[in-house]
Image 1 (cartoon, each protein chain N blue to C red):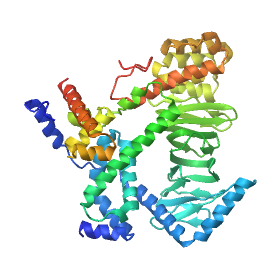
Image 2 (tube, each protein chain N blue to C red):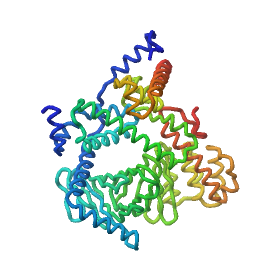
Image 3 (cartoon, each protein chain N blue to C red):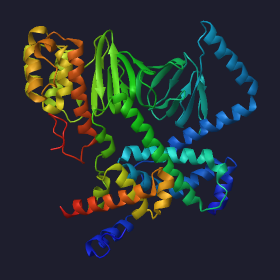
Image 4 (cartoon, rainbow over the protein chains, first blue to last red):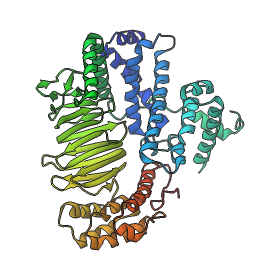
Length: 173
Length: 340
């Protein structure tokens, strides 16, 4: 069955159709969440959150772009919304004495990713990692990244520069 | 970005980035969790459309509750994930079946059943096979379950002290967190915190369990001393002796000998748990592993001065938190919490 048919059926409340869409796209959505968070457990949760959000908002999908593009954009939104929530909670609960920790925001290098580049990307500071993943891996433009993540275009460019510089440094070691 | 346009090595990096696999299969099937949640949300939508008068009635109850002594009671949705979980007398056998868990109701799963409870608007609880759990209260200021046996995973996004799980060995108090909690057939508990903090209380005995730590609990004795996921086996063994066994000076000394700087959370808890005559050696070992922050004086700590202990705890928990979240990214000195 074509994706457009599956989407139409899912929009009418057909969970089986939505499950088929899930099967088609879960790998891409999980990869995006994994690279943006560098945390497999968080990536699993965000992947689930993204599909739940997609189900809730299916009615707003008008077919003006590919379903995959719509879903991946929504996923990025979910990741950044989740990050803001998590950051607020960490600040509240932990009374962090060193705010730079949150800005650096690193997570454990992801086991199983294997290749050096994946590990290096996972070790990037959160802001730089996000822009690098969206720009150099996913192919978004700075304008789109700014729109998706709520940062300025100039910040996106600066973060990309920073990410590439850090990556090169890490891979040279 | 053209800052490295002529740099062949840099171009190679970009090419490698572009070639990273676009798709990575998650390590487990995520669909059951999604299915459970969309089924609940769908049901809620239908309910909102179908019975607007009920909503008005609920509003009236809420208003009455605010004016008088009636507390608004709400039910929580339970969604079948696998098998045939039972909510009260109702069996949830169909895919995506949703039940309503009222205050006082039990949810039971057999060896092949799983379910998800939506905890009001603040989080969810995954109920593992072989679990018996009851909804005690469903109030906006008190979301409370009682876990009689089995295992759950709870994830809550709310201000601290709104979500509680009672067990035969104590009550887990959410401080903004995610955790797994298991209770065996004897009522023994084990909590493993994977996000934020959990306070585990029983009859005045309290353990604060941070991210990356576990704590056992025993009926009649309450929560044991938290220990790190990677704590030495010798330390874990002695903590069991101290918390639930015969205790004694030898066990304290063996625990102190086994402890590392990474185990400061455990030693901080021991300060208030050991006999007063042993407190000094616990403090000295702790101070040797993680230097106390300014304002923490030895004699005040030995008197268990609350402000002093709290100040020391703030330093210890911050170090523990940094050590866990930056694992694999930075080499954190467990004595100071700074990058090495």
